Amino acid sequence: MKSLSEIDTVSKRASRAAGFSWGIAEEVGKNIRILEIFGLPGIRNLNGFLKKKKKSEFENLNLINLENKASNNQFCPIITGISFLDQIKTLEKLNEIKFENIAYPLLFLPFISRASEIIGKRIFLKFDDKEFLLNFNNNIYSNFLKNEIIKVANNISVKFIDNLDLFSDVEWEELHKLSENTFVEESDSLKKKGAGAGLTDND
Image (cartoon, rainbow, N blue to C red; front, side, top):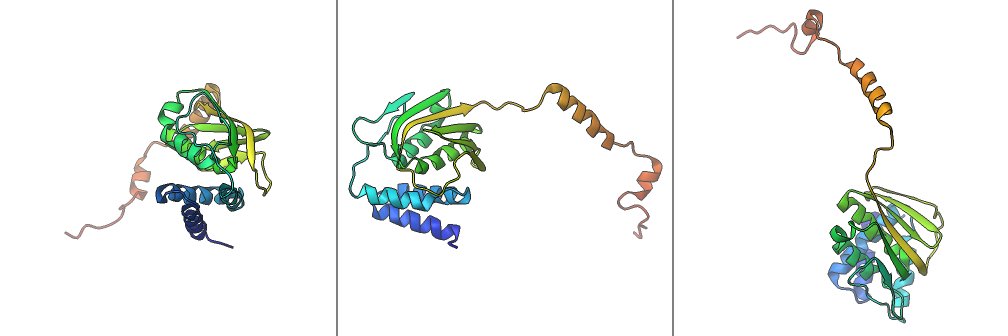
């Protein structure tokens, strides 16, 4: 089994060899590492993307809007992801962002996961029938469990989820009241049994 360090390094070098700058290649290395940690087929999709990149032109999306549609070719998932990450402080003010035709969308996903950590909000990502809930770059909940290459996503949606408690005020108060039972008043006997009790000061 390949180590995460090997996955990062080889992904980075392969991306540089495919024509990306070292800076972008380093981002790709980090992202493939993330995908593999979360059990998603990062290496397979990167390998497929880089092979296709030799033969096909991808469209770069540099400025992201509410709706983003490729003119002629499919959007490059790497450049689109970098743009998303760079603009996240502005984009988080939007409720939902839509894209059409992103190539190899699993390579776009880690950028969204990292964005979730930066803004401290969960992000719901959907491309076609595949759904992903990205939790602060700590884990991913998804209905996609296959080790397969996804060559294109026709319709992509990114939704920002406001941070809300998943419990009621009543439930919180009940639990808080129960927690107060751990607070016991300190008696003389407890003081004698405390730290340092029984030691003799020889000074």
